[in-house]
Length: 140
Image 1 (cartoon, one colour):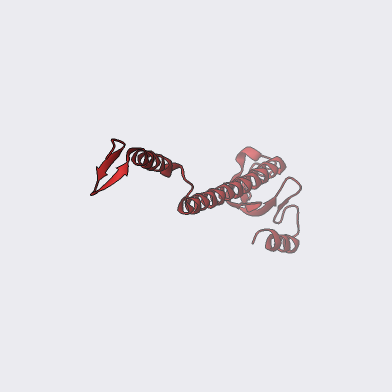
Image 2 (cartoon, rainbow, N blue to C red; image 1 turned 45 degrees about the horizontal axis):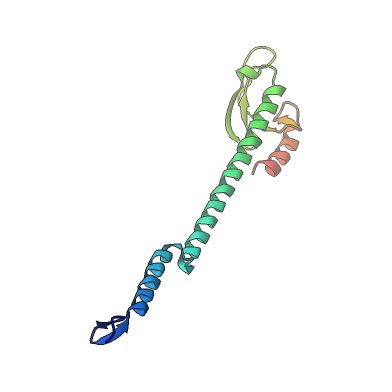
């Protein structure tokens, strides 16, 4: 046999064919990590969905914080002595406030609904029945 053939497992193989086969195997081994596999696409899709869900939760939390902050600012701007305000059970635009009145005494906790557009405090600037209707609509 001429030198261009080698004995390979009981048969003769062309050296060029064996080299090309080796190069093809090497290319395949090096390319596998870069191939786009269906499983990887699913994992990437799941990760993207999870990230979108986290982003939506952050946006919702940020929105609720902004509403509550605006509510607190509007309420304090309405009060006679904003530095004396004690606020509790504040959720969104609704909560309870105790602050000093014009005589310098605390009036006790009263429910409020506050936004940049309106501030309503139970028994102060709105009739109790009307306040209850507004509370039921805005705060529950």
